[in-house]
Image (cartoon, rainbow, N blue to C red; front, side, top):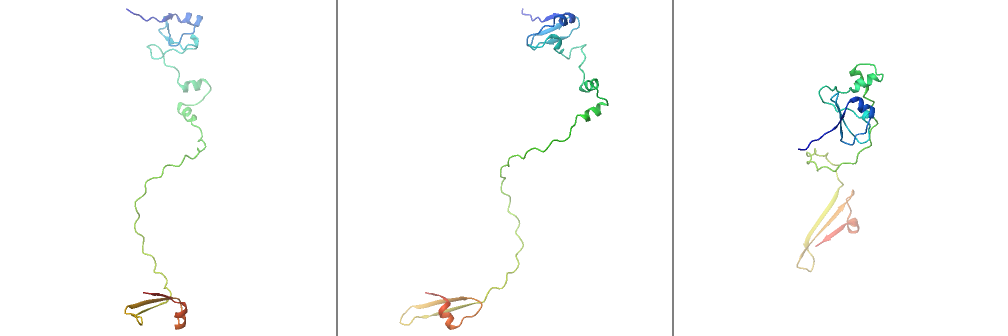
Length: 162
């Protein structure tokens, strides 16, 4: 049958010889019932006791340590003293991805009535061209503020003939 044995000695001897326990090696104080677990570098007196065994008191709270180091006040005051001022704002983050397109908006109200346009002249001629059997049509469009005279029509109008 296999057995696991741990190093054991009295608290006085452990402190006097102050060995360095290997990482994970257990050291048991036979007169106190306490034990420590080695870390491979710390001497016995620098190792903490393992907490949670009957007869072993929990360690001190941070508040108790603060009182021992000169803090004066209640536990609530001590907790409040741990809150510092707000830090400076951080840098802006990278832009996020483009979101999906939104739904179409409601139709807008009708626009205002536009200004009155300029006066124009349209003349349409129908008829057969002399000497042809086919009728012709022409449209003459004039856009301007002055109704043209016959001479203006001849010189300035655009004529489409079919």
